[in-house]
Length: 436
Image 1 (cartoon, rainbow, N blue to C red):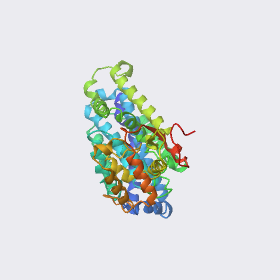
Image 2 (image 1 turned 90 degrees about the horizontal axis):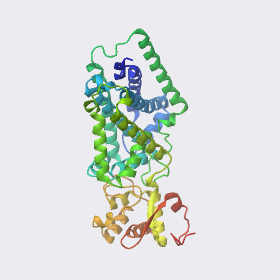
Image 3 (image 1 turned 120 degrees about the vertical axis):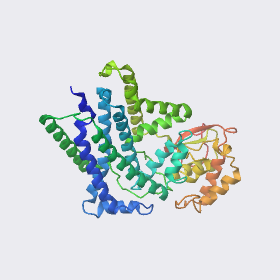
């Protein structure tokens, strides 16, 4: 078997074809898309319903980006499986790993741009998970958001980064093509015909996807983003599910060791050609690579299925195990219903969605009077953001204040309550062990 073909050849036609279709459709979308917080969803709806063939080009762009990511991932796995990185410079492997990362980033930044409820809160969930990374998470997320919450600044930055990542992907494609070894993957007629037919098959599969299952890859555009209302069942994009679930599961237990392990794994993947230089090409004869590859694959599949099954930590909230007052229960319900963007400002830059951190208020030196003043001000505006104000009744704001100030682990014991259970609890009364 000519393993040089694993450098790019068998997927080259498909990758270039999908990339060109995605870029051309994206250029068409740029003509109609308005990157403003109040007009992004409206412009996407107009493109989808009023512009001739706009719906098809929007689907083509969304599905094309996802297909490009899938093809790049398949190509990278194939190079790893065949050991093809052993007979060429290591910079090609690094470029291909960077390509996959850029494809993920391009899809993620594009996921937010329609600014629907699904796009807004899916992005918010992803950024909240990223913010749990020690040292770097909070700063990176604050830069992407342009403040403490997603708004017009975040939309502009995501839009710019989406275009920049697409340009970088194109540059790496051309660099990979031009700097490859002369004669690498030289094709005879039969192989060239096979590659052309494979590319045609992938393009046909792409058009079948945008015809029969378009919502797998593009936003449904059901309703515009409402920062004051957090809908249930919203998750991040599928290609980030495993990473988001891993962050939620591991970073809360031991953030330092999790970040250290993440850096080590990334370096092991990037530098694979430089420390795995043995002549054996079979994966079974490369035990170290086999352990790394199989371990990452199993973890990715496990946490992806975990995320698809609905194990979302953002659907829970802390509440006193001892009998809670009516105002505390109502305050917890308001916290869940609104997701309380200003609660996140009270509790710190992380803005975790699994419920308020019971120790952060005390660590930040927030007094009861400060919390009350902050929440009451939030009825008029959201400090530091361009978001619309929260239309909450005064009694709900008072209940929210009581709930937030009740979270003192030194005085009471707390437990985790599922969102659905708490929101279905319609009457005030006894909560915890006495609730039957």
